[in-house]
Amino acid sequence: MTSATTMSMKAPPSGAYKIVQVPELLKSTIDRHGREGTYVGASESESPWVPFGDNAAIRHLAFDVRQNVYCNILWIKSPGVIGTHKHRGPVWAVGLEGTFRYLEYDWVCHPGEFITETPGSAHTLVTDNPTGMKALFWMQGANEFFDSDGRFVETLDVWWFINHYETYCLANNLPINKQLYL
Image (cartoon, rainbow, N blue to C red; front, side, top):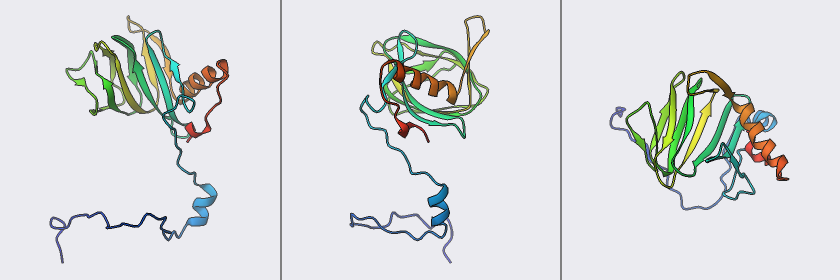
């Protein structure tokens, strides 16, 4: 018997570029109720940059209304701030371009770096970078935004982000990309 500490997972060898039929006991159930994955390419025709205030834009990538999940790329175009907000669900992010930070923390996120935000945390996103920043965000739950005096302003959740995307597309005669809806 081999102990768990000496076993290692190895990627299976394969040189065949072909679709392999994998047995699936529940295939008919998956075929009836499952959904294929989606693909959103890099072109703005597949997901445009939607203005988010005067100095920022959002490129929407996914909406899941069953789990209140949404994924997007936030682009702050030059030094600027996204107002103080509180997360009611978890957030995962990866820096893509430039740098950003939160006033409440002592770190700066650079391209390729990963951050998490926990439910209940409130913070203020800023970029001091002359070229701004871009980051991929995967969020679940609502974000509550507050003004500079700590008064509640608005809740952003999957429904808000869908409306943000669809309203922009309709106003600009752009097609709604159904690949964004999980």
